[in-house]
Structures are given as C-alpha cells and as structure tokens.
Image (cartoon, rainbow, N blue to C red):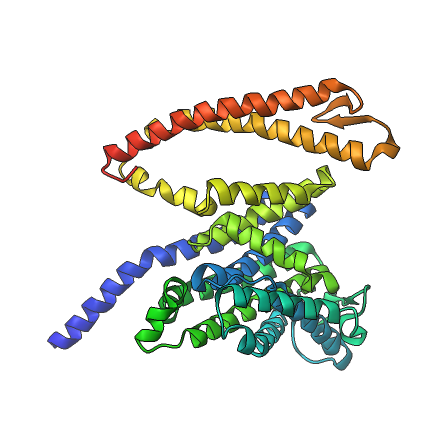
Length: 430
C-alpha cells in the first residue's frame, strides 16, 4: 500500500513539474490557431506560413550548432533534398492515385533528409570543429552542382512543379486556399518543435551539450563523440527535410536554390541572430529574418547587405542573440528591479535609430550612385526627394552617423550604469 502511495505521489509531483511546460505548449498551439483570426490578409497568411517553415528549419540547424557545437555550411542540402523528394512523391501519388493525403506527405521529406544525413554524416561527423565545417561546405557544393547536372531529378534551372490540390482529400480539404496550407504547416510546426524540445531534455540531449563543451572528457567517460555527433546530425537532417517538404507543399515548385549556399546562409543567420544557447532563440530568429526578408525585399534591392550588417552587429554586441538579451533580464524581472532600465533603454534606442538612419542613407545613396546611374541622380529616401550628385544628402548622412554615434556612446554609458545598479540591488553579477 505504501509503495502504491509513493508511486502516486511521484506521478503527481512529476505532473506538477511538467504542467507549466504543458500549458506553455498549449498556449503556443492556441496562438498558432488564433493568428489567422487576427491577420486575415493573404500576404499575412503567406508570411506566417513561411515563418512556420523557417522555425522548423532553424531549430533543426540549432541541433547541430547550439546543441552539439557543429558549424555546418551546408544544412540546406537536407532541406532541399527533402523538398525535391516531396515534390516527386506528390506527383507519383497523383499519377498512381495512391490513397495518401497531403498532411502525411511532409514525412517523406523528413525520411529523405534522414537518409541523406546518414550517408553524408557517416563521413562528416567523424571530426568536429573546422574539419566538419569544411566537409559540410564541400558536400553542399557537390549537391548544388549536381542539381544542375542531374536534370531528371532536379529539373534543371526550371525545377520541378506539382499541384497539391490534386492529392486525395481528407475531411474534404483541398489545400488550395492558403489558410488551409497555413494550418497544415502550423500543425507540423508545433509537433516538430515539441519533438525537438523533448530531445533536448533527454540524456542524449545532455550528451550533445557535453560533446559541444568538452569532447575529450566525453570520450574519457566511455562515450563516442563521433557517434553522438552522427546521431544528432541524422536527427537534424530529418527535421530539415521535414521543413523542406512543407516548403515544397507551400510553393508547389522546387528548384536548385533550395540546396544552395544562400539557403544555408539564411538559416545560419536566423539561428545565430535569435540565439543558439536557448531553445527559443532560433524561433525568434526565424520570425525576425522571415519578416525582414519579405519586407525589406519590397523596399530595397540591397536587403541582403542589411542582413550582413545585422549579423555583424549581433556577433559584436550581442553574441547571445535576441534570446540572450531577453534572458539577461530574467533575474531582474523576478526581483522586480527593471524599473531603472526603461529610460536608459529609450535613450539608447533613440541614439541607435539616429545611427541606423545615417547608415541606411549612406548605403542607399552609394548604391544609387554606383548601380543606378542610368536612372538619373534623383531618388527618394524616407519619402524625401534627393539628388545624389549634390553634397547635402551625403553631409546629412555623415552627420547622422557621427552625431548618432556620439549620442549612442553617451547613452551606452548611462545604460551600463543603470544596469549595474539594478544588478547590484538584487545581488546579481553586473
């Protein structure tokens, strides 16, 4: 009787400890379900669908970079190959009239990503560090070049197209409207996020962290760092292929850009900007990068340059990423000591905005002068008509950068003092 009572008490205690996480995941699912009720436009649904895909892709990449310490320059290989296999699977299902509904098809991409991760990972994960990074880069180039050679599978420059509405229906859903595709992506996104989070809480997830920190000690206690890296690599490939499969369903076309280095660079930026040390970091990075990709591409032709500047700024001033910046405030939030920081933060944000305005002006003026001279010297920036042949726009831009830099330096000193005072007031290290 006592043993039964002890087991019941242990189960109750375990549930009480897991209940906050369960409620958090339930809130996330409700958020995914409710977003289309607030953002109803077609562009918003498209953006949210792409965000869901990028969240899975970035979290899969962080299984390598953040969890296991493996810097890969070719993660798009498994994303792209998963997408190609899903497109071919969809076309085969339509031709042969297999009774396989569309919601199950992304699993084909996951299996394809896993299969190629097993093949490529058996070679690349034998070494870590720089050797792994260079091997991943070589494999990425190999697959990217093959995409233009093996035309029967990759479709050459035109790619492979499909039609998701021709697959067998489930619950009379055609998946023609974007809202239905969004909910499909959201459902897979929640499942993939929960699965990857659960992996981080397992002993294997802890062993990945140990390999990241000290592979020699892991080997000393009897584990194989190469095997840990290999298993993590394979799981990462599975989820990357799943994300690629969802992208294929969303766009209904897959081409060589899916396996290119640019796609690998985007997921690296999203993961690092969000923060590789926290599970929520790649999620934040995926949301921000996807939003900026879609918005900046409509505003400027050199939007990729701004991504590079953002990446450099994060590496220099916030190596923990967005999640690291947020987690820094957790002790102060619990101690209710954040009241000293809003004013310094506003001052710092205002000064940084002045600098950013000047930098943007310099970039856009330079780009127009060097690349768009055929259109004349007149341009519009921030709603203002400018002449790049005149000295005044350049002087104003330089003054904004210099003056904003001085203001930012003063605001930074004020912010540091306020932060140290708040940290010392709660006994935290400054």
